[in-house]
Image (cartoon, rainbow, N blue to C red; front, side, top):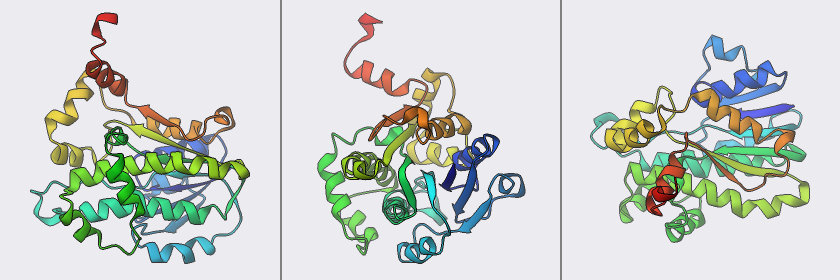
Amino acid sequence: MRVAVTGVASGIGAAACKILKERGDEIVGFDLNEPPENIADNVDEFHKMNIADLSALPELIAGLSGNFDALLNIAGIPPRSQSDGANAGNEALVLVVNFFGLRKFTELMLEKLVDGAAIASLSSRAGSRWAENIDQVKEFMRLPETTNLQEYCGQNGIDPVRAYDLSKEAVVVWSMAKTEVLLKRDIRLNCVSPGGVSTPILEDFVEAFGAERVNRMTDRAGRSCLPEEAAGVAIFLISPESKWVKGYNIYTDGGAFAMITSDQLELSEFS
């Protein structure tokens, strides 16, 4: 397969490239940062991309040669703690990178994807409350891409943590909404929702969400998810073995979502 992968320079994206390369796929990678040499060896073609620069995406994608069999949307950023002076208040950037950029990149890439292609996007367990927050999610998804997101966040009390959750909720909701439209071309769109992942940005999540929130479910699950484990599920979702999986969101969190749901529904007596 010829696979487009965003976020290839580190973490889950880098792990995905390694797995894909080992199985003989061709990888076209995209990232704001140049991948280090050990990762670059797994990428056949690299394009520097700032996914937050929505106006630059059409020209970038129009310039790509050939077609693609699959797309892995892995690029994303964490919330930055408001106490982190240099990076405080990145809520607007979180929204544009994690959702607006992902959505626009995917919509533009549809012209490059062959019929029967598959797309897997990285969401998060942090987006699991999309149904409870559906009114806000839909309001956010309706915003024009020219919206001043910093102003929008200020008016709606959206801090970096809520922005992260909202962006991941929107990825899940948009993937479901898009599913039927893509059936005419037999293109599949699914999501992967890890919990905490052992990547360099895990500490950002600890600082933003708080150690108690991050560690509570990690401790119950036994450990954090490994990058290659999250990447493996994403790759499964673009592989022929999952061809009848469409519009679905798979939690890759060591059972944390199941444990949370069991707690909420008081299911312990049945365990």
